[in-house]
Length: 188
Image 1 (tube, rainbow, N blue to C red):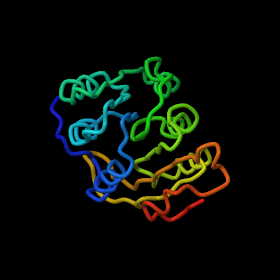
Image 2 (image 1 turned 180 degrees about the vertical axis):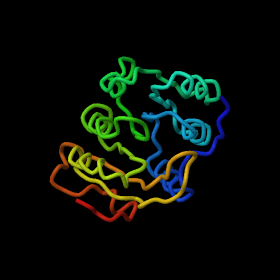
Image 3 (image 1 turned 45 degrees about the vertical axis):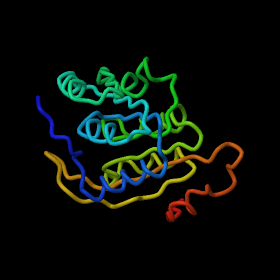
Image 4 (image 1 turned 30 degrees about the vertical axis):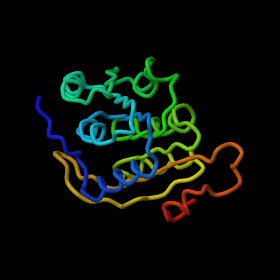
């Protein structure tokens, strides 16, 4: 199986994610749903030291693993929800950024909020226009819609990006400085 390297996203979404990487400069990234983004970003980001991609499809995981940068570790898991969201080799680690673009997206965002994200880390959800994902906002102190989205991937229409983050425990009662630094609009 040969994969193109460009993520299956609209160009605007790729540019926004590029901006998030440049702003937050994560050293450790967790990605739910391995894909072209797993091939695209790690070699372009020298500050990323570890990229863990969780994937449930055996053939797809092998194809990604065979083409990925050396800092990428593809974790093959069963399609069962708990195994996907909390793979044994990942569940005790913390990450600077979590990208969610696979299955069980709401559960993955909940796990990002409670288990995987270090203080000051961010989670990014792709295809946010699907209404079933709005409940994930309750897992975080803050969220912002980065774009409503547009564009067509190989088989799906991709609609939107949303970013989520929690205040560090000592700052729960104030808005984080991310608004000043990035110029984001507060959405709840």
